[in-house]
Image (tube, rainbow, N blue to C red; front, side, top):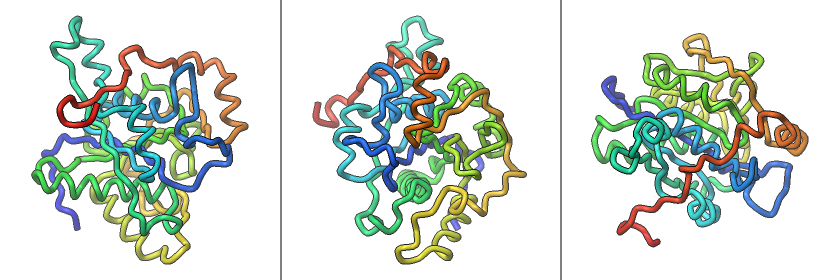
Length: 270
């Protein structure tokens, strides 16, 4: 059992993009589908996680996808709230680091699912943080998928709930990740442990391309705080993607002016 810490305030955002390819079948990675002018689905997911107030953001991917996505996203992003509150944001800006987690080679073609990416990412985050201190082990993980477009203002208004005592599930028309939708949700260390054990016991060999509802079957939503989304679009197939592009909500998903590529000067190559 993983040692947990009730005093931790670390909320870690997980963006899983390692998994079986979507049926859209474009020559670039699925997460790089454009959702607005000069704005991609993966960037929207990172911005959504920052709107939620995550302290760190972790993108779980295949190693060969890392260079192009890393060059697009950079090493850190602004906390939108710190940008809006300060007239001189450069003086009191809050930076949220973005980390890139590569799936193990042994998991290729065996655990090719977004659900496994969530669990693998949580395990990597936990082990990395415990090497620093048990006090920085995340209190909660927030899963944000690039294939689910949600109203970010509602995510931002749920910041206090995310740091509360209960996990949160965002729903639309009474459907959530338990129905294999790409709406955001959180899970704690205890939930991670129970889901990991369930995955290890139930799925072996090549039979591991499982959906979110299957891998997270131990999750009991009766203990979750539920937030109903005003609107939501699943862009994991061409029909739904086209509906989003043609919808009136697409105009609400323009690229934020402050979202540019940032690098840690002196620590990484420019």
